[in-house]
Image 1 (cartoon, rainbow, N blue to C red):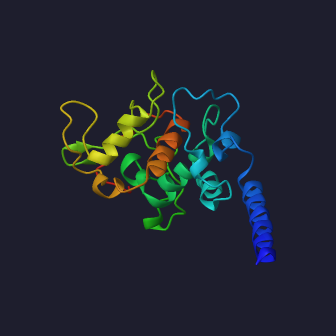
Image 2: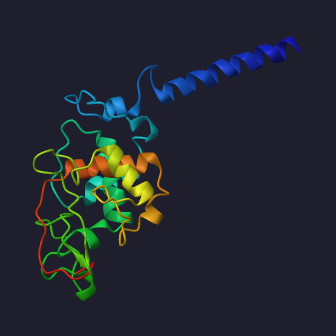
Length: 209
């Protein structure tokens, strides 16, 4: 019985050592490694510890980002994950870029799907009386859609337009997107913070044009 206890204790020590080696030293997180050295937090919650650096979605997100990304001061893991969600899962470009594709590249007409980078996510797509919002960083504040992270997440969670009179969004599929995790929504915001400002295109009467 005594030998069994010694064996169990020895195995437990080895197992604990493996776990510590995998997770890294105490006091560190994935976000600490991934955040740009020039970032001093600015009151932003670091969700990087919830994202494994080996997550292939992060690298895929960087691979498919259609515009240059400003990574200084950004959580790189969140930016990559945000790009993956925006560009591979959520179809944001269809409703928030006017037109959605570069001339002659619309896949519905046999094109290769090259996105319209000049007006990428700058809104301006008309849906009857509604017009999609410009999601790019505001010229003055640098905030995506001129919203703080908290305001952005609240909009997706509740469907309330951040601008007065705060009506429910009628076209945005927030009833579906609201089920995303806090990390997913924070990643989208981080990605939108990293894309360049753009102005809306014109004469778009529907998504995916």
